[in-house]
Image: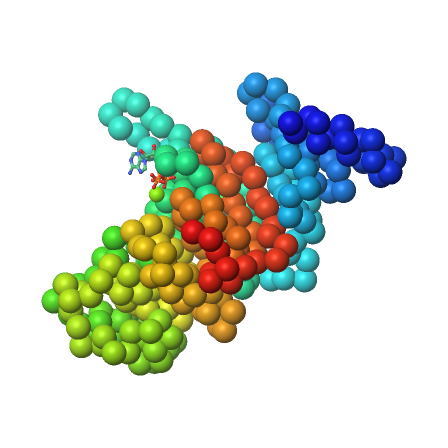
Amino acid sequence: MVITELCLELLSSRISLLFRAWEIKSRTVPSRAVLVFYQIPLTKWSEKGIILLGIGKKITSQRCKGYFEDEWGSGMDVLMEGTEIRKRYRTGEVEVEVLKGIDFQIFQGEFIVILGQSGSGKTTFLNIIGGMTQASTGELYYKGQPLHSIDEQHLTLYRRNEVGFVFQNYNLMPNLTTYENVKLAVEIALNPLSVCDVLREVGLEAWSDHFPSQLSGGQQQRVAIARAIVKNPELLLCDEPTGALDIQTGIQVLKSLQKLNHNYHKTVMIITHNAEIAKMANRVFYLKDGLLDCVKVVKNPLDPESISW
Ligand SMILES: Nc1ncnc2c1ncn2[C@@H]1O[C@H](COP(=O)(O)OP(=O)(O)OP(=O)(O)O)[C@@H](O)[C@H]1O
Ligand SMILES: [Mg+2]
């Protein structure tokens, strides 16, 4: 099917421009070959050989295993940069490499969605970005400052002042109200927002005095988001924020995140298993077996309401 599409393209009037280049990359083993059409890779290397990718997708830029088109990010500030990020865990005698050398850049004000199969390393990757855990090897820079070599005390400050984290299981204090749960984060933040403003932003002002047990799953998730937002972090990291929610509540949660991204120009990264959510991102990171398999730019990001779940 894909080969047929490629042949049709070959026969088109643009034939002379089709094969701009064969780019042979050998940054990591095994060496890779990428066939490029209008700056879109048509092929990627896998253990089984070179795979032809579908063409005509709404992608302006794509990076696949070592290939990078520098279309996205020009004129934008780099918020974070990682090189050869690896994470290994040792269980008894056995050492497992969970992240196998990830290179990435995050630009200020981006909305990034991370997709990948279960066990591909998404949470590990997000935890490293958020300073929750440190990479085994590799270099990680936040606003040009090295995170890979700082001590625990400075890493704590980074987590506290720069990062808001939304966990999948909410992690709310059961004996505190909505307001108090969010207020808790204000007390440790350098430059917090107003609790009332943020609760209004996520549509929870009427639930300020409720305890988590009196809230629905979606409302609890929004309290968790409010708690992360109120710190006024530069970087908001969300691990499957809509995983347990129905469509309507999921859309509400996504709207809160999009508002934060648009109104406050904060950088948002979301892990999800729902590929539809990727349509509202600026870029999509595809993780596969501990590698950043592919990075795509979404040409016209959608509003959450326009996403068909
Ligand atoms: N603390 C740990 N010790 C040992 N192995 C770990 C640890 N944390 C994660 N792993 C392993 O790392 C791999 C990647 O885990 P991770 O949680 O990052 O995957 P994921 O992509 O987030 O998966 P899911 O979609 O199921 O949440 C898994 O095989 C997991 O067992
Ligand atoms: Mg996970």
